[in-house]
Length: 209
Image (tube, rainbow, N blue to C red):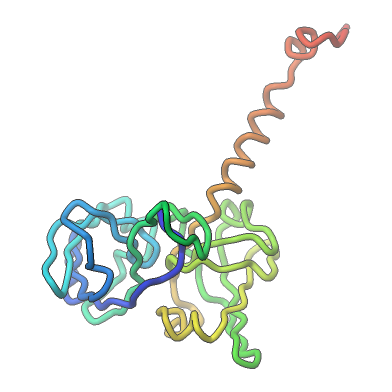
């Protein structure tokens, strides 16, 4: 589990179809082989590491659902270690299980901030609400607005300077993970509504002819 607050920007030093090697610094403190690391918001397992880099294996499903399979040597990536339960939760609960990819549609500068609009699949937008959370490339962001095909976020200068978000251009592919709480609420709502039938009503004292 992660918070969506990026700790460091690393760099891909080797990209293979099923393996990545990423250079990093402070996020390696305290981690061991077998630990998790969020790379652009994707939870990956560290298989090897040294003082300056770590390796992760990339499964075919991960490459299909995210932009991890598009990474090339030299690309910069957002990095975050797993949440320590007695620490601060500055963003929101992020699993590192990317739901789908989206595409940068529009970038507008607004003072020190940027308004960025992302196109997203309808099954992702189903869980996106105004003022709710969404993780974009692992960054916890608040939704400013949404429509039937896209959503917009307002990005402060600090986030732009300390993540790879400022490098994104119109047309770029990004990883999207919706708020897990929104998923559970939707699931419970569907389960409850689908469970009301004639037998249910009769069992709870409603006469049905």
